[in-house]
Length: 68
Image (tube, rainbow, N blue to C red):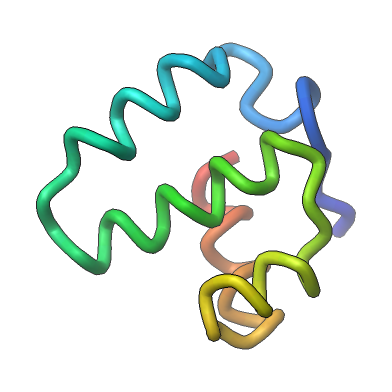
């Protein structure tokens, strides 16, 4: 299953809204999941997100699928 990038990923949520939620989040695990979604919204590949977060590509894929 291909996961959309950029404006197609979470098309109903704006980048600004996602950034606001990310910066307001206090829970570390939730913040990492939001960071994955935020980076995907900014057209980053799963391997790029993996390098930033230290998570495996499989984990990132699972997180992004749950967001969609």
